[in-house]
Image (cartoon, rainbow, N blue to C red):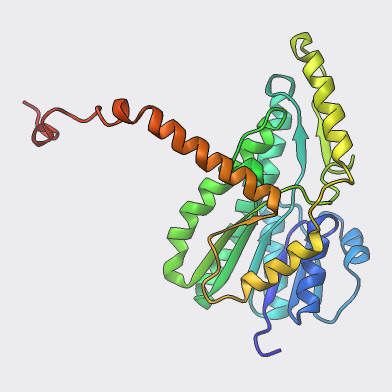
Length: 287
């Protein structure tokens, strides 16, 4: 392969991360596969001369820095970072504890920032690199029972969109990926934590939400292996997309959100556009 790249994938022990590692290796790239349990990562992705398995809890800045050093010591560079490590605290905002919300933000938002902060000096020296962060449709639209998860994904997107402008001068590209429902382990007990019932007002709707979410596990329409192949294609493009909405269900949600946003703009356009100072020339005046 003439354009072999070094991938760095977080959350490589289960879920989409396993597919990302396998697809990159199959395409002829080298991969640093990371996870909190290195045995689980090694068992999930197999062995290869082009694979380095490294321990990494993304909530630890020290482990992020150590993992990046290990990657550079082994392969000399990092071309593609995939911020994939994740978990899911599901429940109504009032029933999720502050600690659970902090853990959600700590993994999905601060964790991705920790790893990216460690990788960026490498990519800046190279004057090249591609940062991919796995978001969600919950990074575009909020959903009941997903308040903590959506907050972390909305935060991830605002950070990534800002980061894109900061690092573009150094030849570094970024992509936000918004998957719909893919058949991963996100809804299995190892990944999802449900808020404890504590408020009677939510009891009936909570029961419906729990029934729905638990029924989705194993029935999601998206194929993670195909998403992995899509990432291989995206990373090979001269100008990768800043956003990739993955799955027909995700596209439908995004298009509905765009239509809703346009309707909200139109409904209050007159009021919104009436808010300027009457005499713009006086905007900076103290008189």
